[in-house]
Image (tube, rainbow, N blue to C red; front, side, top):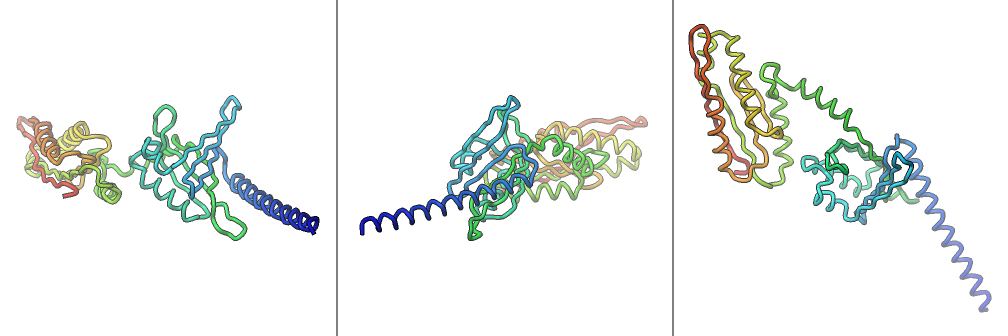
Length: 288
């Protein structure tokens, strides 16, 4: 009787081990299929349940490298592994992983060991168990910084007004809408609408060519006064719009308006006539 019990126990144990081995082989097969389907640069595996991210890579000297990050979705933001402006893309990536999306692709900026933010593409595939339920995400992490910056530069040039070199109306509006949609409530944003005073009279008396020079000069002043992260656009003949990002106090907008009025106040001379440029500025604060 005892012998029979041990035989049954051993048989059940063998079955469980075999099932475990089959499950492991199934997962390894899926990992292989997921990885050979893409051009491998760095390999990552993300466990949505544990929120654990592991990166595998091989250095130029042939040494293998493995790094595991626990509480990944929290740590990535806390230590600025992901650029602040791309947090919403990162959140979408994590959410898709947790939902078990079969194929996941996202492009965002990550910080490298030199503290520089570079463009990377994360391409992943969900591993499915024998019942088809999603588990870990396996994929590649590829540095696409050079080609991405080239694409953005070409896109940026196409979206800029040829005279002022500021963003065209439609693209400036799109960038502002995207920023406000993803704004997480930290600090304020300031919207400035700027008109050049008496610009129509200027063009009539001194010519359109001279008017173009004034537009270029004021646009250059705007670019020198605001941060590169701010959004600057020319939305009409003599009208500009600016979205100031991440302002800590609404009073800072008033200071910037005063600086702007002083910077653009210049006297131009053409055909023995003088023109002193001034601007009218409307402003609003978000959130109010």
